[in-house]
Structures are given as C-alpha cells and as structure tokens.
Image (cartoon, rainbow, N blue to C red; front, side, top):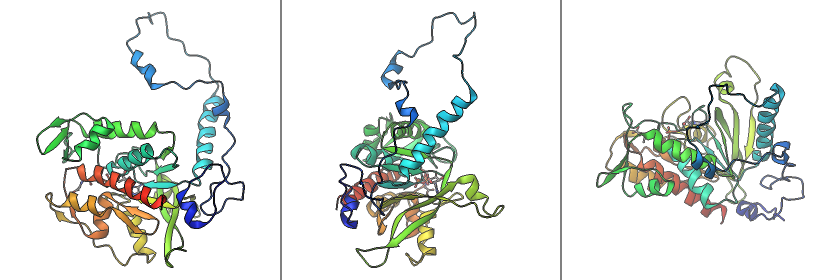
Length: 334
Ligand code: 48N
C-alpha cells in the first residue's frame, strides 16, 4: 500500500499500486497486461546470441519468411507504445537528454535501483548526444582516470595510456551503455521526443516551487510549433527530474533555461572558455539538485554555473551521470 503523504511518497517504498485515485506522486494501478505480454511469444534471451553464426544451411533455394498481415505490425508497435505511455505517465525519475551524462545516469540508477521506474526523454532520433565521436569529428574517446572505472563497470574496452584511457571509437561507449540501458526492464527511452517544458508545483517542504515532472512532445512537433497552432503536449509526472540537456544544439541547456524563464533561478552564468585541468572536477563535484525536484549535471550544469568547458574528454560526463544517480537515491530515500 503506497503511503500518500507527499514526503513519504517521494521515498516510493511501494509494495502494491495504490487503490486510491492517483494523486500527484502516487502510482496509479498498473495497466492490465498487454496482449503483447500475454501473447504466447517467448522473449529471446541475449544468451542465445552466443550461437549466432553464419548459417551453414543452403539459402540458394530461397529464403522464405513466415506470413504476416500489415495490421499485425501496426498493432505490435502501437500496443507496446500505448502501454508504455500509460505506464510512464507517472514515473519515479525522468532523465532529460540521453547524451553521455544522461545515459550513464540511467545506467547507474537503473541498475542500482531496479524498483525505480525511470523514463528517458531524448530529442534526437539517435540517443548519444555528443558522444558518437571524440573531438573534431575524430573517433577516439578520451576518459581520464579515475572515471575509467565506470567504463569497466559498464563493460567498455579501452587502451590504457597512464593517467587516461582511450576508447577506440566513441560510438563503442555510446552503443554499449545504450544497449545496457535499453535492456533494463525499469527504464523506458522515448527518443525523437522533446521535453518542451517542466511541471512545477508549490513545494510543501520549502515554500517555493519544486519541479514535479516534464511536458513532452514529439520533437518534430516541438520544432514546428511556429507552423501550426494548438499541437498540445503530453506530461510525465515524477518527483525527480535529472536534466543533462548539454550546452549546445537546438535544445541545449533546456531545463536550466526554463528555470530562469519561470523565475526559479535568477540567471544563467553561461559556459566559460576551455580549461581541461579543472572543468571536469567542477562538473562532477557540483552535479546537484539545483532547485527542489531537479538535478542538473553534464554540460548543462556549465551553462547554469558559468563553469569552464573541458573539450574532448568525457570522464566528467560519465562521473556526473553517476553522481546524479547517487544524489537521486539520497533524495528519493530521504
Ligand atoms: O552530449 P550532450 O550534449 O550533453 P552531455 O552533458 O551528456 O555531454 C556533453 C559532452 O558531449 C560534451 O559536450 C563534451 C564533453 N564537450 C565539452 C566541450 O568542451 O565542448 O547530450 C545532451 C542530449 C542530446 O542528445 C540532446 O538531443 C538532448 O540532450 N536534449 C534534449 N532531449 C529532450 N528534450 C530536450 N529539451 C533536450 N535538450 C537536449
């Protein structure tokens, strides 16, 4: 039975879905199992992939697929997407941005706390943000120690160069952490989907406002608001939002800009020039709950705090994501 007082509901020490009508942070009853879940299909375990090989069977006589109807494909996708939207309408944590910081946060939090329902909103079709390449369109990704320990935990191979390590292609990091995050049963990724506003509530614990979720829309719709009126958004309610919206790009530093626009923060101090020797330590050590209900990390934090950029070294992003996960657990378990 979920306690419904505000403070305790943050802890989400839930055993059963609350029978009461869903409140602000009370999980509504889970949706009925979807036909997808009750269908007689048996999910394919990745362990079976070990048998993947070039088939020796003769295909020269023709390769024939099992029969299909168009409506079966349509329903297979829409049923799952509809179930996902229904289930994630109330989440425990929303992560804005699936760049290196956001994905590492999702991986750390999702693996450490399988009880938490974590929803990632990523504006791009391809998650990953700036972590598909190293620097100046070159492939290799540099990660300074001790952040290489996070690569070990995730399972990303690297070459050791002493005080730093090199992942031979940044896409190897991004695709590996992405595959691990997507395989977590308690994490849902909505890519090609933009956070176009925050949800705020009066903060019963502090008198001001607290962030209580996000407003989302398909990115193409968000980008086209000037072309067509009244394309209203969706909402996802959560007691905690972790924002890693980066420092550039069409949506850069999105959440902290909304904090200024809504008066929750006075001003952005704007990212400062490059200083590789100090920038990463600052970002990791200052990843924090910047207003009640919103943790900010990665390069979005540099825009809020006026921190230096660090250039093409990514350990600070990985460690900021893990720091945000640690802070989130402290807040949710308070
Ligand atoms: O990779 P980014 O931009 O952000 P981080 O903080 O994860 O990593 C930053 C890192 O790539 C660097 O910039 C490196 C270290 N360079 C430093 C330097 O000196 O230049 O990822 C942010 C992600 C992107 O995928 C965006 O598409 C997404 O966030 N995003 C959003 N997704 C949904 N809704 C939004 N409003 C939104 N805004 C950004």
